[in-house]
Image (cartoon, rainbow, N blue to C red; front, side):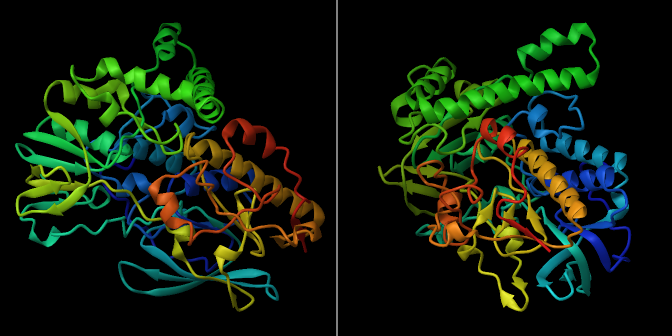
Length: 500
């Protein structure tokens, strides 16, 4: 098995310049798509292109201290492959899990690293995609063709994270780092560290570096919601003496976590005050005595309008109780030579500033698409059930959930794509394209994510770059798992899809 700390080497150049299915991205989504092809369509050829130098996507780029899942691995893991570790796991353990998938499905020879897709063009006359690729390690340019394009790039821009512009930053004499680009040689031992931001990244990073840093301060503009979940579920502890098959334990815990996530999501929607009290009161006993809970841990938005910061066994609050970490809620006035001055006038001195300020989104890897010579403007297209785009033939994409584990939805998306492939074969069709129906002619183009539903900064910043959705099925998405686990398997494959 490949070590999770070592990037796999690309075995060769892409030899097959035409494949039945071309997968873009070798992260959780891409490997899940490859598994589906390998097991359900063994007669179809496929290749996986990955622009990075290793598998894993987010789990490869996020190499900052403490990087770990912020959802349980029993639902984040694939439906077909039981997770055997603790409920919350480090990024390295997730990479090892993905390495097992690669080995078990014999995918190593299908993945080509350093292969960045620079354009994708569909020809209706040829009924195929032509994809231009640049090798990031050699500069070599390649051209591949494929009958079907499966976009599994996620939506984060791994090369250009979000960095606000702060006055005086150029004067600061210390080290500034974004978690997405954490230097391997950065040592925070004995140093004063200021982490700007209070999202999931800060929640995982701070407990890890607080163990050896002189002190870690988290600076937030406004509070987030936190949930102190156990690293090992109580149910897992109860099941362990029974010596059950791994598949049984996986399925039992998976169902338990799905039920928990469903409750959090539906309560946040239907009874937000109940969830607010559950979350705020749940962490109150874990905080140091005298903490101003109203100021630092009572958000101004509805629960689940942004991601909840999951902290296994409350390790973030343990660092606070030990005096190793603290929270400041204020806005930045300017950087000084020694740190950051906030609006109250206080200067927070720091040797290292970590800008845990979030990410930029890159829809479909920011790859330019054309269909029959015409550039595709995704901002004028709508989604078909959150996995295809109107007017774009033979292309599916994988997006996960905001509130549930990403992979729960990836498995459901793969089910639908599998059904579409079989439906095409039954019809003798070689092309499938989402097409608006006559009754959709005047349908409004709505934002890809309704701010009333989810208003995280990276979502709001991306509204002008992303595809749209409509006000009716099948042109909607962003539904919760409790809805989609029945609606997607039952989706009518002739509703909004045309076959040729």
